[in-house]
Image 1 (cartoon, rainbow, N blue to C red):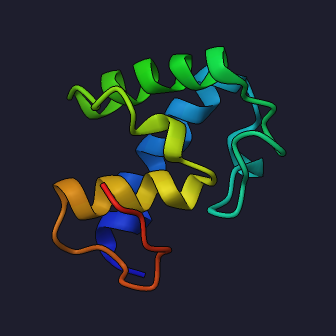
Image 2: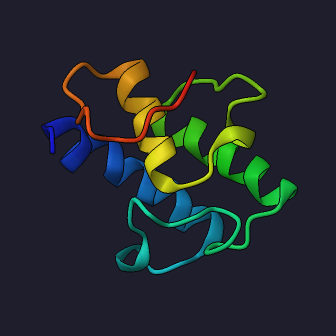
Image 3: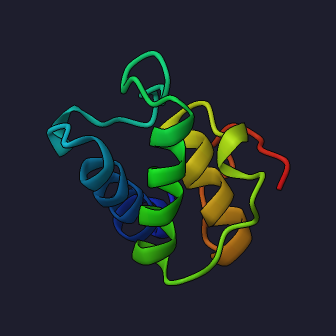
Length: 95
């Protein structure tokens, strides 16, 4: 995997998920599903969006977070959107 995924993007996404759900960060993987594994409903996803905005210091479009299914979707979005050295094996996600 690329360096942006290993250190920067995944770590920041994990931090945002941890701050939103209080799940042990060691239990968060790229395959972790936001609804099924973390139990995030509509309000939880809104809280996650706020945390992601704080962690990445940017504003997300209103509709983006609702399209995330797994942590890999979030990592892929930020990697493609804000970093050049991302892992091309991440699942495709239309921004």
